[in-house]
Image 1 (tube, chains in turn blue, purple):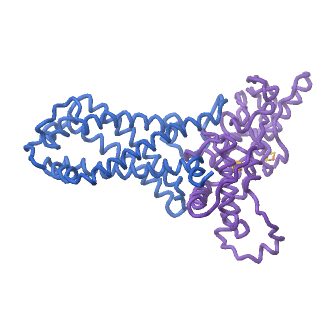
Image 2: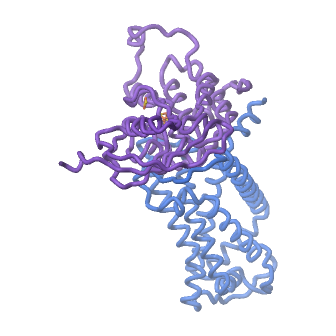
Length: 235
Length: 263
Ligand code: SF4
Ligand code: FES
């Protein structure tokens, strides 16, 4: 067995890939949310950002390829490892109870026990989200600036439910995922482990609140999301 | 009579399985007048005396030292490995933790690599094979005085000995939702990697032990840390992180590849 196949076949090696792709996706969430927050600054700022992003085609292609690869690897490995982990105990217990005294939630709701569920909800959300913003499927968004498009989509009633569910699921997912990824790649030391755990939880809250803020605010303050401006041609 | 001197009347819901191929079932037993000073295993002894007197087959369970050092005992008690107390083996668990009238569900460790031999006794030789695959130092490293000649930083010494505290009971596997043996395996890897005696073989050791752990069919680690909470020896998940570091380093920065060998 070559060293690399051995590594990628092992439980530890595959969790390493899960962790690296997960951390990369967390980084992407930060960038994505920062970009979105420009909507609160104003339509112009958002349009400028969108224009800058889309005018650099090489960068966009590279970023999208990397993102797609990371998502694909992360999702495929999630399914295979979950399946293997489940089948490592064919006969279950009649009763199970945590012995950890620092659990805030019962096991059925705990972030670390529901990674598959939150990940799946996040994935379903992602499909709708890509269809909305990348493929612009079924919206009739011609002759609109990026900010106007975004405003229209997040103001939609069905999107309120879907985007909020997605944001909350992803928030719960990363609240365990970020700290877990650090442990998996070997970052654990009395000096900073408590810090990582805290940052991970705060990050989860920021993701959940940050991304759900757009559809919620669009319902509460519709005027914030009506952007003026015309499409600049020739970009 | 103080509360702790009361005698308990209990219902025990015990997993009974005649042998490895029997399907098994739960059977309810009543035990009365159990002293709160008894250990959990002494309570099971009372049950077995009762069963033998009635001409029934006693409940098989593993035990040896009964002082918390050998790692032989261990059952799931109301869904918790070694029962409700932290850093406590089943033999060191006392009946004063229970209330009269309570029903106690007693199950064997559950994991495919730990098949049930009979009732509550499971086969843990998978752990022996993980140790055989690398949990040792190949050369004679001398006596205690030779150890004293080696300068080892105190922090490393302490951390290594914390890992060496593992008694191989299997509670970490039993408590893990993935039936993962990472805490056990990491304890041995971490114990030896931090000492000069274990250093020369550290890369080959971690690669072999992880390969054997996977081959036995234990699940992977999801970092839920239930193992740490169930561990009677207080082995920390810091050692799992060290195993991860050792494994990544060994894979990318050494020539070690897993020596493939079967059970
Ligand atoms: S790490 Fe703890 S729970 Fe696991 S086998 Fe060793 S002593 Fe038992
Ligand atoms: S019987 Fe030895 S640790 Fe319990």
